[in-house]
Image (cartoon, rainbow, N blue to C red):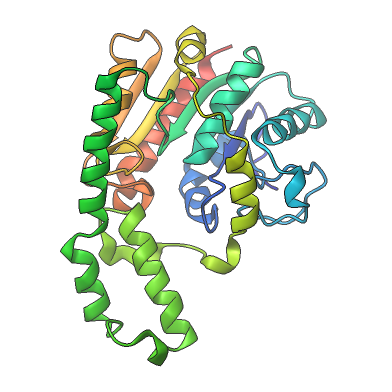
Length: 290
């Protein structure tokens, strides 16, 4: 866990990152815009409150102890240990599920909530919902396989027999393919922080097994008396075009959807200035809610 910012009158802020991410460092860097006015805590997504390593599911803990419910329990234990009555939550990717689950279980604890690269807050219900998910899946496949990915591999001389690649080159190939999934501008793959060494797939799979097969966080989000902001790229594979988020936020009094054009799941790489400005505005709005 890292804590940044300690000015008087700070706004307590918790950042929840994805359990499937190689490292939360990139998004943490983008949050520096608010650190002068907040105590900004970035815990590792692990089930053990005694965890000390920073990263994505890298703290020492048996996989059998990993679950979404225990992640949420740890978040509230952290809040209590810091003697905070309420906190603002900023979450990315699978971390948005934790934030929404936390809101559902402890509705009085969060102030504002900022969801970045947010997963849809409910699973498909109707046949039309399922059909829309299928259409999005086709768009996602086309996006992942776009010609720009092969162009980057070729431009860097990596489109050859993998057995001839050095260890460093194999890591670069992984970063290009990871950027292809998570960014719109795959040519910015060098900005992707971390790598496979920073990721614990067994722990991620253990957490995924405890995810409910069906869920609906929309009622809790709409009831929340503080602002809820969703910041997604228009090429974010979790909700291409932000269609599902547009549907549930339409007409909502306190929920606001920000769609960044030409951005993917790691929108801070594709559109750093717009991402930072949107995040700052969302956190400022969240902090005003008492």
